[in-house]
Amino acid sequence: MIPEYKAILDRTTHRRKHLAEALRTLRKERKKELDVLYGEAHDHAFSQIDCTKCGNCCACLGPRIRQSDIKPLAAFERLKPQAFIDRKLKEDEDGDLVFPQMPCPYFGADGLCIVYDKRPRACREYPHLDQKRQKGLLGQHLADLSICPAVALAAKYIEKLLKE
Ligand code: SF4
Ligand code: SF4
Image 1: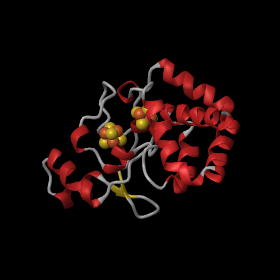
Image 2: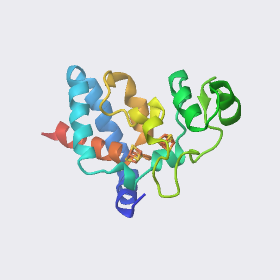
Image 3: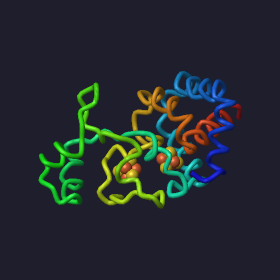
Image 4: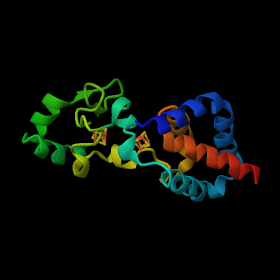
C-alpha cells in the first residue's frame, strides 16, 4: 500500500467514531436513498483510489470461495475442481471455503492479483460500496474502515453529505 493510502487509514483511525456515527445516521435517516448515496460515495472514493497501488484487502482479508469460483481457479492450477478444494482450500468455522493462509496465495510480489480475470466473486464485489441492499452492509463497512482506504473516503464523503 502506498504511503498516501496508509495515511488515509491512519487519519480514519483518529476519526473512526465520527465516521461510524455518520454511516449509522445515514442508514437511519436516509433509508430510501441508501443505495444511491452509497453509489455516489463509491464513485467519489474510487475517483481517488487505485486498487493496484493498495492491495490491503488481498494482504489481510480472506475471500469466501463460492462453488462458482472453483472451476476457474482449479483450471488456473491445472487441477480438477475436487482436487483444488482438497489441496488449496479449507473450511472455516462457518463452514465456508477459504484459503488456508493470508496474504492470499494469488497476491503477487508486485502487489497485483495473479488470477485477476478468474478472481472470486467476493474479490470482485469488495468493498461492496456499489452493491444494492446497503441496509445490510453497515457492519461490513464499519469493519472495513480500518482496512480499505476507499471505504474510509466513502465514509468521509457521507459525513460531509449529512452536513449539507
Ligand atoms: S484472488 Fe486476487 S483479488 Fe482476490 S484476494 Fe487473492 S489476490 Fe486479491
Ligand atoms: S478494495 Fe480497498 S483495500 Fe482492496 S485494494 Fe482496493 S482500496 Fe485497497
